[in-house]
Image (cartoon, rainbow, N blue to C red; front, side, top):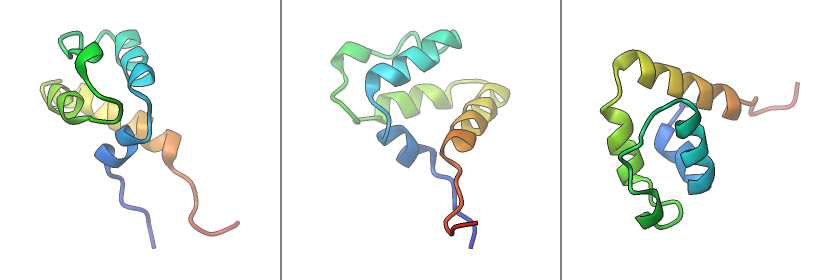
Length: 75
């Protein structure tokens, strides 16, 4: 059975500092109050990412999916 990709679950697995670095390198999510967000509390990050253009949201999802996409059974 194929894994269903859930961006929220993936974002919760990544430290906030790494998420901030990722989005900063892409020139995105500058308005997120990174210093005020508790670790792994991703609601402000998800909300801000929803404001990205559809193309940029798709790119973010593809990048995270490719990073976390692994087979569920041994090859």
